[in-house]
Length: 449
Image 1 (cartoon, one colour):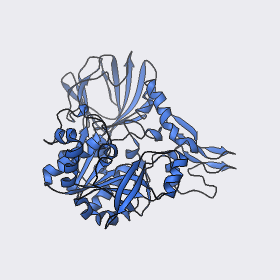
Image 2 (cartoon, one colour; image 1 turned 60 degrees about the vertical axis):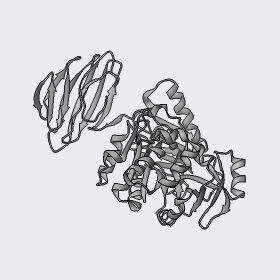
Image 3 (cartoon, one colour; image 1 turned 90 degrees about the vertical axis):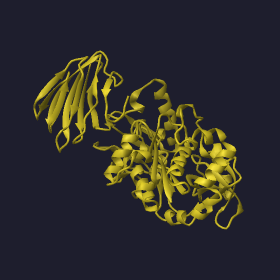
Image 4 (tube, one colour; image 1 turned 180 degrees about the vertical axis):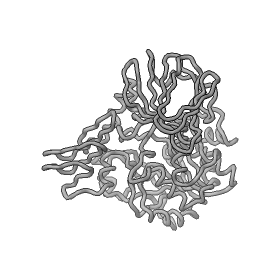
């Protein structure tokens, strides 16, 4: 069995933990990120050479880095980086076409990268593989509550294993969700088991535009594809869709309420490190802060270095609307954390005003930044640990701990770590414009424009 991991989401309902450039699937939780947990799960169903990851261009280096942290590598033909997110059907079609190109005929399990799934699901998935030869297989979860944040599946006529799908239902209101539960509907897990033969036969029949777009393996212009989910674009049209109920722990961790429900609670229902007095059923995530909650209940309190969220647990779905409001103002707080990950390492913004910005730049051993220049800012670099190889207008020099250099605006420059330990540099930017789009790249080994 092959595995496809969908890792292109941005998790807006978990802001401020989740940001566009560092979304929830890559955030470390309990020692590993959800993406890493998903990769390990896929590795138990497939060998590492049979795992395919679909993400987007800005996250592909996070994928590389987090797989390497697990002790594995992923080849370029197994990492598919979308230039623009187009929902699940184009993403799955691209990965299935890559599998068909490499293996001709195979079955593939499709996992979202940001869900919790119990280990017992793996054996249930394995025994479902024969069903995928003739059906598009989806997996349902028996509901434990009338959840309004999940889609639902209505089961039809029974099969030797599982059942036909009668209908897919979008996220309902609470009254409708209760009716669904009473009538035996399942939560839609977003997990699929597909064979290349059956999938492309149904895709050609119901979505010939996508079938033709991926016929040669790589679509000519991915941005022109329709953005559409596999549920709406294919499964709701096909007459060959089966559902199997997974008897296991599952959560899409799409909201802070879902995250709260997945954690271990104290005797008063609280989650997180804080001092609680007459407080119950609260969720606190504020690393490095002393937090006290007195006489409150059902609160979400999430604190990061640049943002604070306080909301009623029952309204956690509305965090998405808050993010929309920030986006309408073009506020970068929805896009970046103070720490921003790059393929060569990371940088952390320590302080900023309109005319200066101070960063801590961390470069991994053997890595280097692109050869670049800035039109509107100059930079001072001070090495605080490690050794820096600095290129300034074609001349190269080495800087050691405590040494510094100055990069004028308009000067071509490059920073490299030639050593075997991390290079840490304090960078002070000065100028009338300090945003990240003031950069002209001349040479970049990571293929960035």
